[in-house]
Amino acid sequence: MKILFLMLTLLTLTSCTSQPQSTLIELDKKSREFNHSALLNISHIQQLKASSNSSQKWQYSTFFPTTAEQASPVYYYALANAHKIIIYTDNANFWLTVKNKLQAQGSMAVIEWQFKKMFLAKQAQITFIKN
Image 1 (tube, one colour):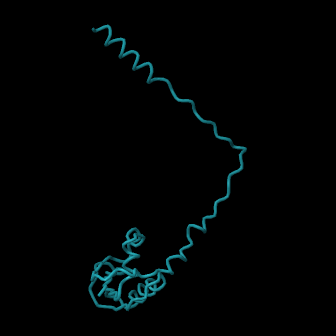
Image 2 (cartoon, helix red, strand yellow):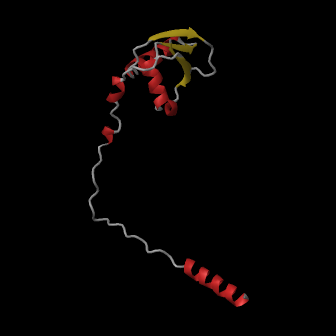
Image 3 (cartoon, one colour):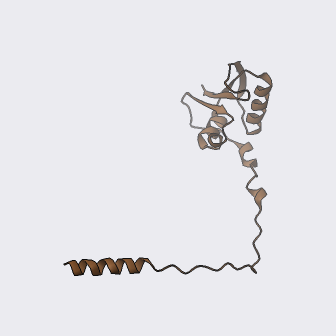
């Protein structure tokens, strides 16, 4: 029994020690061009269409700026279907910046400003409301 165990152990160890064949990099091969500007084209965002079957009332809040969340489908659904957007911030100039960005992204809702003291200087809470 010990000999069988020893043989299996040796077989396992010797089979695992073989290194894979390394791949060679072809330095003479010409690289392909990639159009990076196609990734940055966000013109489809400006053509948001509201959902025709959303009759329920809802409310969605997020903070600005949050790039990861703003790229989510929930954010764009709220942006397209909200009847009213309230931006809470303590800086009126920053409110105009956020308002212009929301309108550039395709918002057709009424955008209001309400004063609320924020922890950071350039931070705003955005609340999307569907009546």
